[in-house]
Image (cartoon, rainbow, N blue to C red):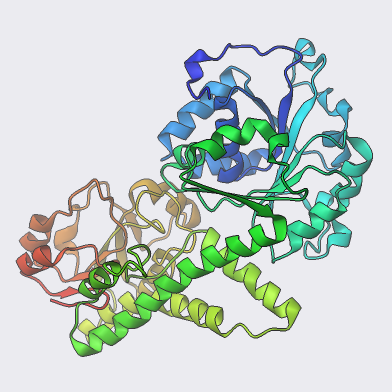
Length: 463
């Protein structure tokens, strides 16, 4: 496996097969970069604006960004606009593109196609993406390209969709790879050496047909290959279980509040039981990001289509939504509702530490509720500042601060929403101004809480 970019030549042979990718999400960008690290040439068809937004949103992924720029410069990765007609991607004539040098066009042939949902344009899929009869690209793939070229699908859709797409594709080598392994902050490494490489195949025992992915499977801590339907089901079950564990702990955190029990100690004890394990037992403001919410939405569609009840995941979704407002209610109760025109400081905005994304983060309902009371918000957003500024341009009650301590002496409350594990929480700064702390992620350790001179409120734990 060649993962050292310095070992790769600046120009590939004209007869070098290329990996043809379609998409512009972090999944697509990471895949393109990893394939380039495996000495592959990648043609990535992407919406340019959406791709640039992905790269800007994930600017905290320093290793990925550096390799991406390197491979773009060396033309190991070539980005091309997504045409409205899928046929021009699957046809050999697609290489008649001004962004590809004439010498490079000679003898080029695809080694695989990799499509990322839901990033395909509606001109490919139709406006009703739940109906496979509108998947226009399938007919164009069947009519246009060598049926021996493998096709890989990735993304989150209702259960069974990818299996049905695979059946409609008139080629034996169709695969489904869910990105259950990708981790914010270390996307490149988590794909190059995944925790779990899960793959579905249309034709049994055919993974040897995509030999260029064998290094990823060999480097995975766990690898499992089965049929596509089972892989879809496993993907959804994994994600739904993680969401359920988070919501279970948040439900119990409210009971812990009423009983005067520290939920963090309960989590520690539960983690000692090997039948349960330690992962996803942390009470806080809930889960966000894109994957878990998208999975729950897709599962809801599956249940609706199959006319089965979905009581558990409906409860998980409701608990998660309500949990995101809980820390505000604790702030409101602390001041007996007298919160108008105050100033607060907020540390962290991303949906989890180490990320620059705020999708599904509790920062959004918190800001909305605070602003409804004309409360000035001083936000130390870190890596998420660019996205937050783009979402709330020139809001009169939103002030970004460069350092956590900045303006803390003016605040009547400190909300801790996310915090890097590599940065110590400045307890001394909190104590200097004795500001009440509202810890939405239970980030302060018990010993730190004991040193506070001010009031502390957590999730299922109080001073």
